[in-house]
Image 1 (cartoon, helix red, strand yellow):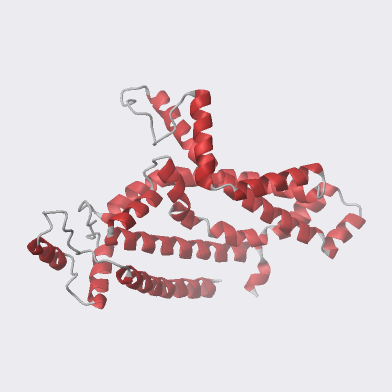
Image 2: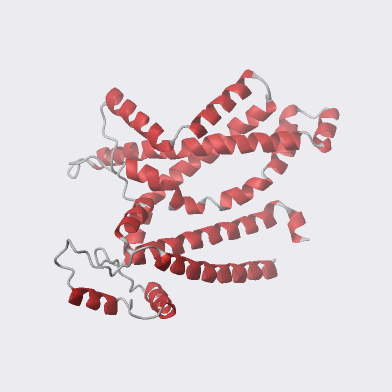
Length: 319
């Protein structure tokens, strides 16, 4: 097992290196240049642009720029071109804002998808199965931004409460329990919206996997022995149906960045996805490259967790 973990770590470090190189090249192959002069802004004189290029090593070859960038990144010296703030500090602040959305949305998705999918597979063809199938495909088909606006309009007109941002404006001197409940309320709506699509998709996967396992011979043998249906479904069938979801569970970590752009933009939530989108619009290359690097790290960490979980849940992997 130790040899397997060591090989996996080495492979992922090599993969991370190639991902960093490709991301760096793609960013610099994009149209436009970070030092491009804006004719409408009188502050961008040729002298300022030249000083900017030298300060951020843009006058060096690409491979030298690559080394300078990751040297500054790992030593904490990389700064944003937009506001001259530390990139790592900005990402850490936005990470803490995105983390509650991610945690609540993930808990809702995984705790609701499995009961819905398992029950739908057990009662295949019944009214419950048809109803969940209909609503699942309905939620998959509805665009997220459209459903978000419907949800916002309904909540605001029905309950007359604010839903935009992380907190209600002007609650600085309010009691702590009131502020805490206000934060929870602002967190609830975007979390539900983020979990809706995940529940619809994941419950379909759970249903199909359960149906596949339920058709195996050992399940029919267990039923023929007269075992209780709950024991057959939840011990024998579910245990083997869970194996493919180990991989899916490890790959939810990148959702901290990529899965929250639309939700954070609609609800004005200052998270990582919104920061990455704003950095792309502003051509803030240090932020873009750092977010790409963090995303790659999250993907590789997620796959590594999946590998370890496979060793735990499936002894055949050790062979």
